[in-house]
Length: 213
Picture 1 (cartoon, rainbow, N blue to C red):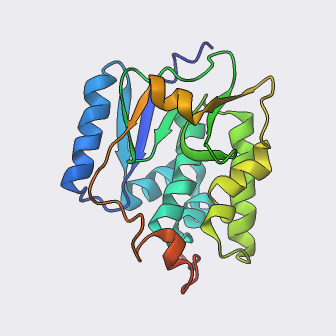
Picture 2 (cartoon, one colour):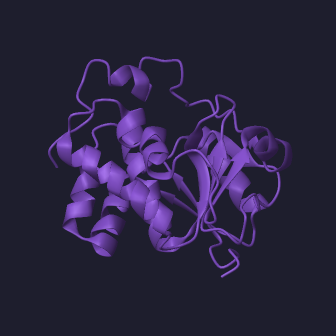
C-alpha cells in the first residue's frame, strides 16, 4: 500500500445542521481535493457508523463523551481506523492536494511549535496499529472517568502517551511550519469557540466531561 488508496478526508461537526461558515470549509476541501472522498459526520451519523462498524460498546463510548470536541476526538480515531485517510479540524483548509504524509509509513502526525504532537490534522492508513494504541488510550480514560481533562483523556495527551514524540519506522512527524508552508492554511471560520466560555477548555472547568449513554 502506498497511501494513495486511503483517499478519504474526514471532518466532524457535532450538529447535523452545519454552520454556514463551516460549510465553506467543507466546500474548500472538496474543491481542492477532487480525487479524494470528503466526508462530514455529526453526532447522529457518527453514532450510527460506530454502532454498525464496531458495535454497541464503542458507540456508547462515543456517547459517553459529554462535550462535542471530545466526541470529535473519539470519532476521528475510529473512523480513520476503519476507512484510512486524513482527518482535519474545521480550523484548517487545504492550499493544494494534502500529500503531507509519508506513504511508506502507517501514520503521519504534526508537531506544533510548542514541541508536542497534536491530533487536529493527521493521516493514517486503515487498520493502522499505531492508531489502535491511541484508541486504547482513549477507551481506558473513558472507562475510568477519573481524568476530567479532554486534552489528556481523548486529545493530544492520549496520542502522546500512545505514540511518544519521536519518529519511528511506522510513524512520520511533520513540523507545523512545513505543514502550513506547503499544504494548509487557517480557515478563519467564524463559529469557532476558541477564546470563549463555550470552548472545551472552559466547559471542563465546571462540568464533567463524561455522561452515561
